[in-house]
Image 1 (tube, rainbow, N blue to C red):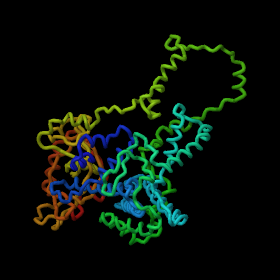
Image 2 (image 1 turned 135 degrees about the horizontal axis):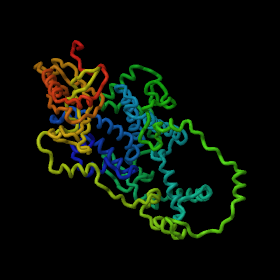
Image 3 (image 1 turned 180 degrees about the vertical axis):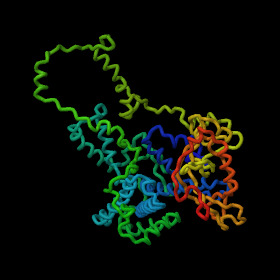
Length: 542
């Protein structure tokens, strides 16, 4: 879905491929490029040809992009004043609070830990400015120094002080820290002597979004151009300006107005629902499963009864060592039945350390080449397979479809929008309708909730159903179980187009899908529970 949005904004396919499938998961510049592309997506209000689902996805990404922009710009836009930095952080905090409350999203928006980290980052910025302002009212404050940049700089100097012994122990660390501090102080006094690492390329940007220089990652105070004097800052004003900026997103502004009208003193940035989520226990689905230390608990039950091994008695160990016969050192060892000199074997095995392929120490030990070798990614393969284009009608991302769902032993018509298409085990952005009947074609879709239409929605009373702009669960079915549709679109509400349907057509779709079912297909129809929104209900509740 993100690919289709970026392509619509005329981002080259090769760049999309690079942004969405990074070879290096820690490529800061690439992550920044992706987020900046998202917040640069324009509105589709003036595009009458855009599908309602595509338009709604675009607005959701634009809202998320505004959050990204307000969090990142205070740290990379060197022309911002301290007041402007704090205002942007306040805007991000208010937006996150509203987004967590909207439709009671909570952890559906993001894991609680990520929400907490972002809010504590904003809180820490305001608290540090307040404390520093009391300590030195006429001084300067650089927000970029609140991160770990200075610590990373010192660590980099420490690791490069003795090139042939970069892995150090505690004693060496103690002996070198003094020299490291002196080097840092010298570079702080003479920033022109400091040269940034070769691979760190996050650009500093100006207010108009143009890159100033492309070879800077850890931005230093000497590069900052904005006014960062305490005397120019009023913290309360910055905070309130951030709240006012949310009015640019009317949907979130309405959510904040409801929170303010409730006047609940227990609700604040770290307690979005009135309870302390920092110390509260996490729900089973409230964890970041992309974290390296993520543990889903699988495999623990098998070993829960296992006893830890007993430690060997040291006295017995010493006694065994005394009784062991002392053998003469043998310079060789057996390898596959052949005697091999230890020194020659070790020399051969550690040749990669003497002539490293990569400057990165972890990659060096893993015997990874210095420069990443890019293989054909999913996107490259798809483009080569479909280079001739698709003939005839196709089904794309955010495309409306009709299918059947099973609820309480009965089959009901369901309208949905595609969010993934798989053909021959490959994810594709478009697929010919003729290929949907193939066994290898699968479509993932999200339910669209329909409600009875009113006279305001359809003045000619032709349509008696409409999309309520609400969505449900996501399901994956074989392509032959769906039918691509092209419903009418209402544009009576500017910026909020929605689909219109007729009961006769919906019944015809149900009859068509039902007649196509085989015994095997009937077992593959997704099962859903009855809810307020599905099955679709008429005004009478039937």
